[in-house]
Length: 184
Image 1 (spheres, one colour):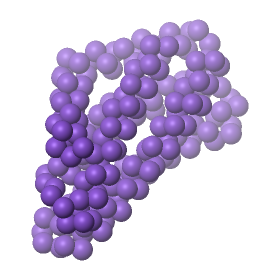
Image 2 (cartoon, helix red, strand yellow; image 1 turned 90 degrees about the vertical axis):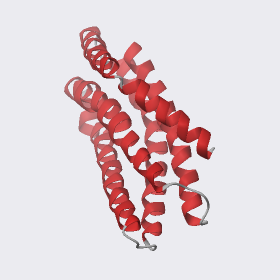
Image 3 (cartoon, one colour; image 1 turned 180 degrees about the vertical axis):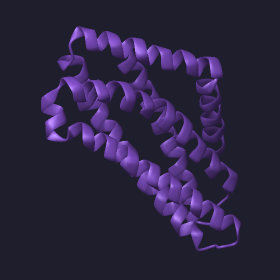
Image 4 (cartoon, helix red, strand yellow; image 1 turned 60 degrees about the horizontal axis):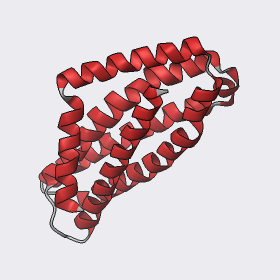
């Protein structure tokens, strides 16, 4: 499925940002050179590229279709687990944003919360991506009927086309490259 290939490519881009987030966290911890504005860029990337764009396709199209059609997965809680992990990631980003605001306001101890939420997010997402790539996506490709696959392909293409028109992919992949060049 072309939509699954695209989601796997997006996972690789998300993992690239996870490496940036870990490096920024290390620099926050060691009092190294970092720009707090870059943490806001990481949050923006996660919220718009990883969550709204990528997770939006998973939740609204792929997982919704799988939940309806593959009873074994819906009854086992496997798909619900994916939703829960997406929500945990949103929690970490909200907490990270709060920590950045506190750090900007002069609370040096907020460094701890910046590090904790960045590292928690990177660990969660790295394991989450592995489950999706090796299990959930394979289930979709092997267990969904052809009509469902066609629906997923069509709907994901609409999302991709709209995002391309808005320049979403270009904007966030450029941001990712700039942060990689700066920190890695």
